[in-house]
Length: 241
Image 1 (cartoon, rainbow, N blue to C red):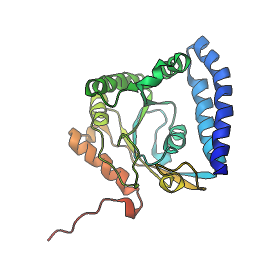
Image 2: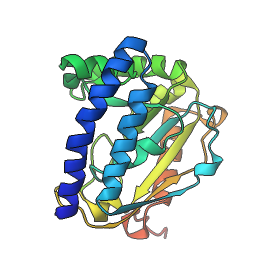
Image 3: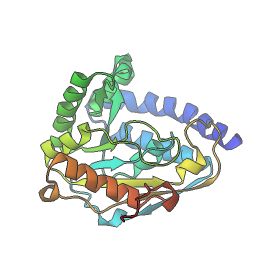
Image 4: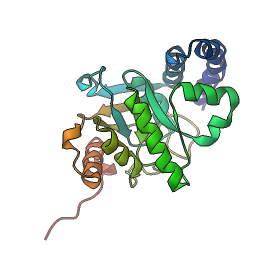
């Protein structure tokens, strides 16, 4: 519990300081990179203060000059502050549209090319795909938790279809990500953090020419993400008679 409170205390102090310095600079220059670096540094530093060690696998196979769509599993509130700072260059994410109504924060998120989404509205979801494509076309990465919500038991939930429409529209490589360890450190439904190691596996990029149709692409990404999960969290395949 103390480690969790230490992390939250650090964030509660560092976030306003970063905003106090970074927001005016961003609004004056129109350049969000300085603010982005401060917030990602604060995010991952807070997690480390909570006793979470972070290991990466496969990061060296990414080309920092390329634009990617990163698709990850999701089991903990710690997943975004761990994975997003690791992404090469800046990445956009999908954010609840309600947050964009906050005057200063909303403007900063728009400058950061974050994409508003209404998960309960199918037509709004289509609009979010189009908005995300515009962001990717500008050379900004996109990071998506393809299950749409956190898993309670660490196993993969059904994937949302929108990210795969987006990938086919954009034709940029997909990098499947498997994050493990956070289900033990801070599973859904628990507030306290246990010290431990979170491992982020960057699987080989799936190149545009390998996409095929949406369903086959979804199967490729799911198989890649699932291959990095501990065996007890993988789907059981019945033996053929």
